[in-house]
Length: 312
Image (cartoon, rainbow, N blue to C red; front, side, top):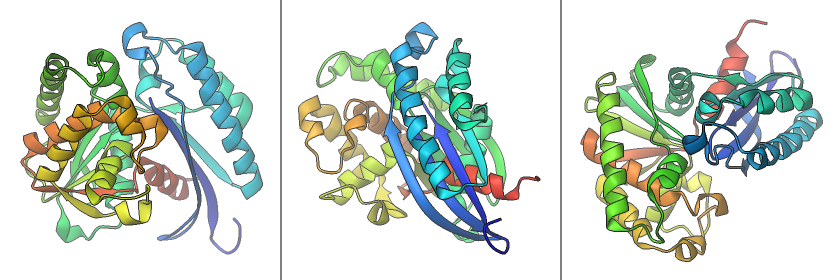
């Protein structure tokens, strides 16, 4: 412990598109963020097609882990948890990556299930919201998969489906901007996946829809007309379904270069925000939600809290 009952933890979330680090001090119900870092590494490059990690993708990701390892040492972290998600679940050569992380951090990443991913996202996303705004539906649109999780104070049902922004982009979009036929095929794919999720999760019964991760927060930034990406403005903003549909339509009509110059657009999201916003738009339609709450607190925060509450 740093002092008294304070524990300094490091949470790492490694998805299909990005790898992110959160260092925080936790004491009881008190949470103080020390640092957040994100690197767009596209670990899932080609995994949907080949079932394997590309060597260049592993190299990019391990370079980011080197940066995180230095920061973790500098900050005097006591506990680390590294969770790998969709791409790592799918890649048959994942051990090359897992061993590389272990060499750098001294721990092996946990390749967590979609349901565990959903539960951690739920914990991170709902913690700041009053219980009377529940039941909640938390939607986490990642690079490889999208998680749907429903509950009041605890997870009651969850489902992960393979409609992430990287996977949909690689699978369907060849033109710039995407051709109508490509968009139509993507919509069919997304609708089928949402139907699969709805067999497990009551997606139309939530009082509040919360959307987390880069797709949702980038859509929020677009709707809010931000001159730069500002998580403080985006966090807990409420974005209407009509605004989501309009933002998705705008992104789908733009070329790569037009999206790249948007002031709030992270360079690593330029080529996947079209598919990601389409997924979000279809979710708004399927759930019937009038709006979503954009949350900057997500699976990373859930991982951090899990460290503080885990037995030694």
